Length: 243
Ligand code: PGA
Image (cartoon, rainbow, N blue to C red; front, top):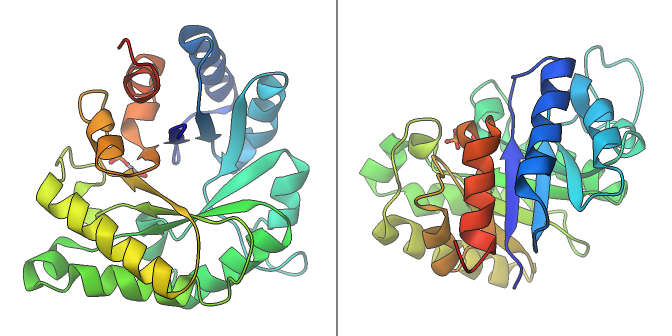
C-alpha cells in the first residue's frame, strides 16, 4: 500500500507565499512514492495548480458549497474547484463544523463533490468532552452514518481527526487511535462503503509512521505542513524506508 499524505494549509499564506512554499516542497522532497495532496486556500489554488503541472502532487480544496452555481454569495462550488485542477476536497473539517456546518451540510457537500468526479475526504472526530463521557465512538459513527448516507459508489476517503488533537500538540495514543479505526472500519463495513481512513491531529515527522503502522492509510497534516522542512520530514518518514 502506498501511503497518502494531505497538507492542510488552512487560512495561511498569500499568493506569493503559497507559491514559495509549494516550490520549496517540490524541490526539497524530490521523488517519492505514494500520494501527496496539498490544500491551499481558495485564492491560491490556481497558482499552486500551475506549479503542480508535470509533478506527482495533487491539488485539494479545504471545503466547498453543495450547489453548482447560483446566488450563494461567497461560496465556491465543486465545479469551480475541478476547473482549477482540484481532485480532492476536505469536507466537514472540525474547524468548519464548529462554525456551524452540520452533518447534513456535510452529507450534501459530499454528494456534490462526488458528482463532479472529485474525491471527498470526510473529516470526522470527537471532542474531548465526548471522549471523556465515553461517547466518542458513537459520535464519530453518527458523523459517518449521516455524512455518507447518500454514497453508494465512487471514491471517498475518511480522515479521523480527534478535535482535542488538532492544533494542540497532543498526540493521540495507540489505545485511542486503534480502537477508533476498528470502529470506523466496522461502520463503513456495515454501510458497504470501501474507503481508506487517514489520521489527523498534531501529526509530526516523529509520530507519522506510527499511524500508518496502526493501519491508517496515511495522514492529514495541519500546522506541520506550513513549513517545507517539517512537511517533507513527515512524507519521508512514512514513504521512504531508509528514513
Ligand atoms: P494539526 O491540524 O496538524 O495542526 O493538528 C490537523 C488538521 O486540522 O487537519
